[in-house]
Image 1 (cartoon, helix red, strand yellow):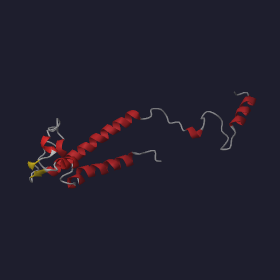
Image 2 (cartoon, rainbow, N blue to C red):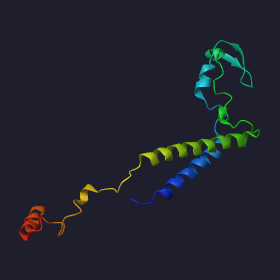
Image 3 (tube, rainbow, N blue to C red):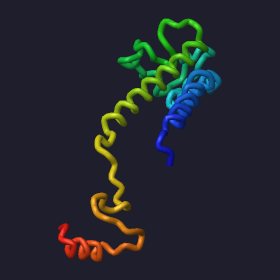
Image 4 (cartoon, rainbow, N blue to C red):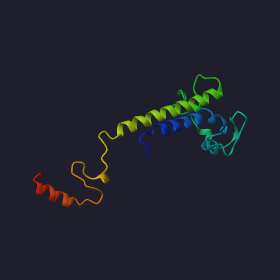
Length: 145
């Protein structure tokens, strides 16, 4: 595996930014399945307002964060719908990437990595077929241990 994962990470970030910033604008106009299922039994006009019938959506209330800057798949204060949706997606990707990167940075290994398959690093090694007990006996015989 490559020692430098940055090209892969930056490539993934670029793809996510393109999907969130551009492709998200071509998604369904009715992306939330829960909302559509709550409207079953009601009649709805072209603006999405309930005009009659009986359904669970009639008891719906606004969420506490309905007036937040990124509510309803857009950015508050941006009047262009295409730009608002794309900007909201890009901001969401960047926030998620920053949060995930920060968590990985905190959880990273702080010391040098030790490869358990390489064996001890401070003893003499003769080759792949060396016998550690023979090496220890030779060291004792030489008086170095």
